[in-house]
Image (cartoon, rainbow, N blue to C red; front, side, top):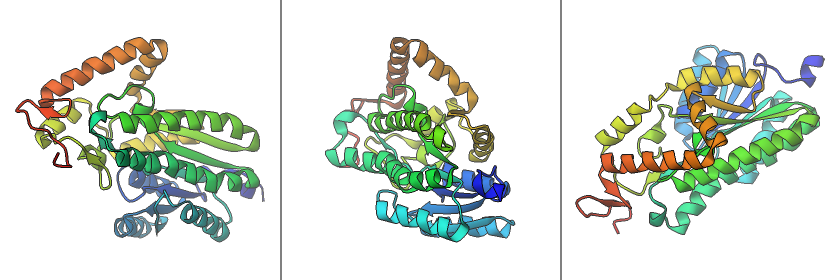
Length: 300
């Protein structure tokens, strides 16, 4: 009976992964299943989520796909309650769904701010609100919120995304300190550059407000040594098993975290310099190409 009153790592556990159909979410779901966890893949891309779930099941794992909009709190709450009713527990909630709206802040419309806050921040809040009471009631559970290295350092040219990811770091650290006495764990995941669809124009539901030639963008990302999602997931789950508070993978990105902790001014200067270098390489400045044409997806 004791095993029913403590978190399982990871054999026999139950996990919900939002954004589980692709990228980091898919890799985490696949690795969780390999380690004996039943996985619920919650994603708007239901056909793709069902494909992933079928592949996991075919390889001997346990997985289920559910269509989910993380901005819909009643739907998220229903998923958590249904999962607990069916399996008797909820060991892990990966609040992973997120989008990128890339480009200069002067190109944003208020709708862009609303969209990225609703998905990246409110979507995580909805997951926490749905699962936290369940986990405190059962006396165990682990919530993992996907932020980014953008949550630990400045992000010029990506201000909206960086805003939401900084908020997730603060939320996760504060909730971890509160939840520990109730047996609930909270971690924040801060990936470096991972080879996912987000690198290709913001992913399925994100967007870029400036047109960047694909070949130039690929060269820029390659310089940052993008990690494969599967290798990333393996390292992340090892850190989760050790209940790490802030999980940075690949580990060499910790250098930038340390710089920004020791000297925020130096961190901002380095971010500014790198951003200016990137502008020169991509041939853009303030949303305007060197040829004088504005590069936005609104046609303005």
